[in-house]
Image 1 (cartoon, rainbow, N blue to C red):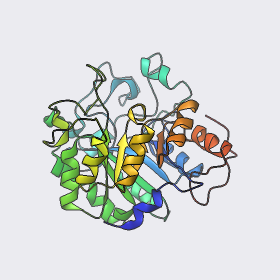
Image 2 (cartoon, helix red, strand yellow):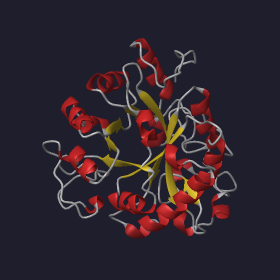
Image 3 (cartoon, rainbow, N blue to C red):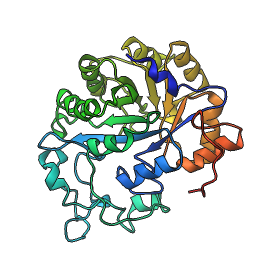
Image 4 (cartoon, one colour):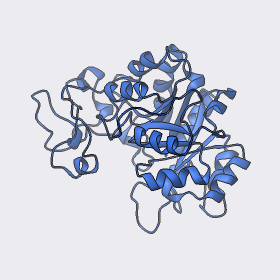
Length: 323
């Protein structure tokens, strides 16, 4: 595995910022417009979501089905219900849908009131994004592969998703500046076999009681590739290290300074998701994380700048307007 992952480790004056789904708080998620914005404001990493189309194209979208709150049909009408599985549509078929904004009046729109709607945006392929960043030698991709251990028919298999993701990474020479991550640790096993040179990040969220629904750390979890795991006493970073991972990526609300110290002692990087509020940015910096995944990267830049920190080694202090 390439030592280039060390470029993303925190230093005395740098905490890395990853634009989540490009910059979801500002532009439509997982779109080329959002990715270009992240580049333009001086980030050196973005987080994106990968699924596979019926004809084997790695595409950048989050939900296994076309989600009605961010999708319009070819007439420009919002979907009345969630659409087909992405895996059942060709890449050409996916291009007939518009993903340039959030349905007005929806609960999702209320979460991101500052997002600029841009009708006409399409679901890009991973190759489209690779083409954009290949000329930027210090820029990193953090790819979350969307696989659902509790619903294995919702997506292609972990091995198929791995192969489809690797194809454009190899075509554009990006394997050694890509981090792949997943809540479904079967995917990370497939990547370890197929491409050990690609850094692997293990996503975690602890279930507290019955919620949250999206958690993968709970008794008898199907997400952990057969591993029996308790979140107590540093077990999560230890498990990641034992599996040969390079990055632990916990939900920011789950992680403590003790957890971060333990992970660093094991040689891991710690990137946290998804941090959007100013007090939470400060806490993550205080506990020592290496990277912060956020929907509002300029907000993160401003917090860091106010503390005399940067988000990349050659970054100027921010001059762009906040979002």
